Length: 463
Image 1 (cartoon, rainbow, N blue to C red):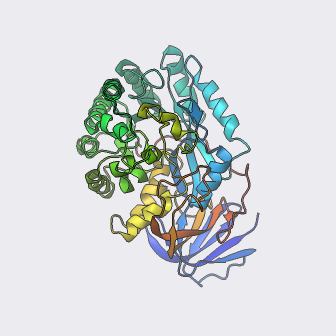
Image 2 (image 1 turned 45 degrees about the vertical axis):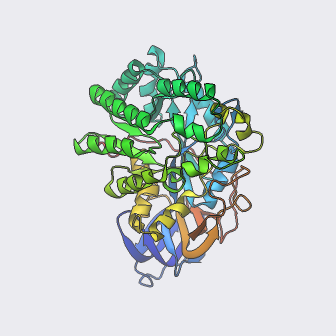
Image 3 (image 1 turned 120 degrees about the horizontal axis):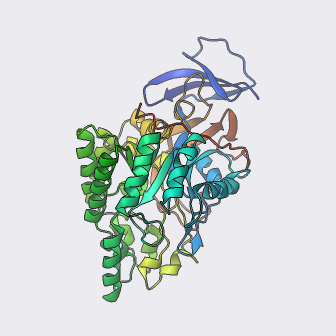
């Protein structure tokens, strides 16, 4: 393993901004010092002058190869983690899926097999529980012990992933006893299915109706209900992909009461809207995801929630489906459009644009994209910061370069960009993963299989 020295950059973490040289050895950060104050020798010197030196991003919500609606997410663990590296993300936490009637462990093993030997960056797993029963409840503590310490439940998708309130309560009780963290897809799926059926009966089949039937009030109602169930169970709660102002209000009210309730949002809710869902000629299908895109006026509440820490994490919910041959499955019936957007490559850049636009500070950028997800899911300080002893997951970031986001230039294995034509300021230049350069001055030099599985500890906000 080579000894690497990064010189002259502005080191930005969630806690500090300081001009410093960073010394890396054996895959770890070993020291930081004021520029030029230490006569360090190194096998490789990277000049970061006029650049930021930031921790590698931690994307805590991705779905590589996810089966959905009769097809599969188009990014494999190989293509998806390579694209993540291009975007300055060096750790993903993906979702292993329990099949109905099967053990949690068998689902985890299946996803481990998909990922092993294929990932360009480090990876971990949450566990999707699609069949909560006596047997799977007994498995939860065993998974926590093996480093899979978070469990996703769905109030949506009846007949697929849906759990009723009794199942949710019982899983929350086990999580409360073992230190596990329940992640909740909070939408009232039973009510939504009624509205879907009624819309289709009226001939309302275009993609824009996907957003109209998945009401913001039904996201808020489910968020409220999940919070109350967690209170009864004595369990922490993490609500994924929060999209609506009313749902943010539920989280804020719970946190004002001192409850261990946390929220995540995604770039698509911060930068896209129902205007995209309404694009003509079925183009709106590209933007179908759940929770759905909301009218633009919801964005202000999401940005405010990120500034006030009522929302703690920005993940991507990266779940790409090609427009040709996949999204098109829903022509004539919006309910058959595979739900999901590509974004694992764009998150760090879009959030830097939010810094440029004045929505968040530079340190908050690093907090919501690197440090908070690492703390939330038991990976900090190994991941999410630049400090002695941390993994040398380090990005040299050019805050002055501009780029135009486009399917023609991205590295995700999907035939469109959700942000096609958007100009952003800031670009990843060089990426190190555990001290190994994987992006070298805008050239990919990594390899499939070098990423390692990360057993995780418990949520570090609950100590």
